[in-house]
Image (cartoon, rainbow, N blue to C red; front, side, top):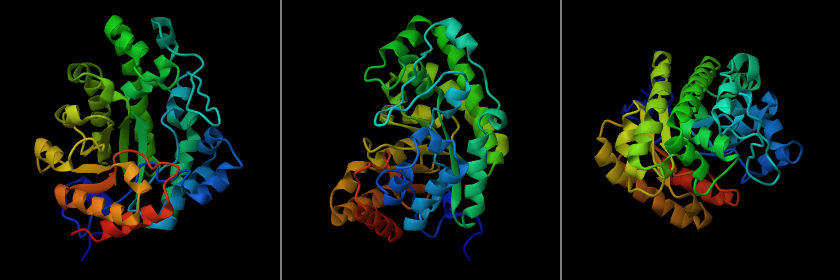
Length: 342
């Protein structure tokens, strides 16, 4: 008889499962016509702050594809705004932070916000999603990891070379540690509040930590990510740490204490499992661009990854988020192929 625990959560803990769980990063997004219909009426940031609509778009991919986990629709910069660093989202365009944080006085002004007081819309959206989901479908909360959030705050938006952030890390390490420490405190409180509101697992997105040299990751990323993971231990929820471009950092990522290591597509999943050890669950790692091909190619690539990863302790996902131009037929083919994996 199948366990009452959701399949996704059992896989996160390395337990045997009757099949491979599947969800996709950015599974609620512009590739879905129903999402585009909602977005036509509201800005991105306002959508994140409207619990009823955030709940609706979180549920859309679950209704359409039956993924094994829902991940809250929000943005990693929501807590950055609550810390006192304004964020704007030009439409179209990536995030912009018009008051970047670059000197000690900027960092000292930042606060560690109370999630219930300053981000109640996130917690209300989580409560709504959890109430609407079937018990078998897990709910994932998330946040950006400190280095990634710091990159936006220091650079003032997205960056190619992260020269300003790296200048702070290497040129003013005490100030950098103050910023990273405030971010770690903020994220730990934020994720704990998400768990209280109904999240059954959490993912830390360290989208830009892969730009760090291994020793710099150990100095400026690992301790603060480990602090967050440790703070969540009492909550008894699995923690996934995803580092984009993190193939050279796998062993260091594992030392954060996370339950699951998220993998991008740049590393062979069999190699990752060998390096991490068979007891460490992994998540990933199909290249999102494969979904721009044909259903036949999608199914073949999914089978290759599934065979290389092995069934136990593998959560199937992309190596990064779903691209806006992704055909629905490709996602349908992926769901079918993963459901058929041994």
